Amino acid sequence: MGLRRFGSFGLGLIMLTLVLEPVVAEEKIKFGLSTDYYGKYIWRGQNINDKSVLQPAVSASAYGFTGSIWGNLDLTNKNNNPGEFSEFDYTLDYSATVPDANWLNFSAGTIYYRFPNTVFKPTTEIYGGLSLNVPLSPSFKWYRDVDEVKGSYFQFGLGHTFEKIIEVNEKCYCGLQLGASVGWANSAYNNGYFGVDDGHFNDLTLSAGLCTQLYSWMVRPSVNYSTMLSNAIREATDKSDNLWMGVGISTSF
Image (tube, rainbow, N blue to C red; front, side):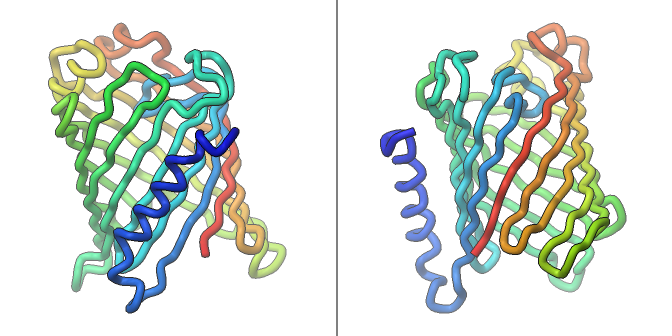
């Protein structure tokens, strides 16, 4: 793929280290690496690429802060970018448990979206969210575009993991991870992305993954389905129903 295509990842990793450098002396930075292959690239119900993609990511975490860089590499010429990155997302997140309420977690952060090799302009979102440490792990997240779109997207999620349904030893086992989410967006968001001047429940997404721990590596094959819920949004999208599969591999150190 060449050094040029991975230049942004190298630069981003240096930036993450510099951001977290003040806490290095007090807490060791934890790094993460992952790569996911998917038959399609679906984002909030939108079919961004109907063909194969590779999505690598790097992250660095300390004291509840996590900085990450995620990329989307088009593997076919579906979007006229075969073998090229079409997106980089730069995220800075802070997540923690609410003091004296270990059943409630919160997160806040920002995402900068950049789209090389495309006609799309970069944009920035800020977000905040809550999740409950109770059965089905209900969660809520609010994303606000403060740049190009200037609209809001709200995501409501449920999920459950059946841990160690198969166990070889303490370092080799697998579990079943199930998830579901519904997205609602306001008029500004829907107008920016779909040309629809109204707030709607946009998408429903379902996922099932087999999380397989192999010593220090996690391998996760998955199957996913999404559908656009609003008739107005469905009419504004080419492919409103999508079924896709993928497999990811990740590690941390």
